[in-house]
Image: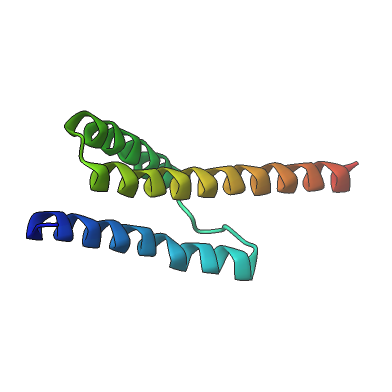
Length: 96
């Protein structure tokens, strides 16, 4: 492994680590208030574009890094939508 590849894998590890604080916060609080759905949608789309770029360039570090970006972003979006849907249903049930 040369220096360039080493930097690429270090960047991969750091990107993977960036999702951990958000996950810990979500799991502890079980709340997603204050999370920007648009930000995570753009984050996920960006990860998808970079993953395709990495695959086209045959750069495994870029591809793997952005697989984690997609998983992290998509999971936050899904949990946000699930919580919002549950909250809406609870409000409808209370109103009736």
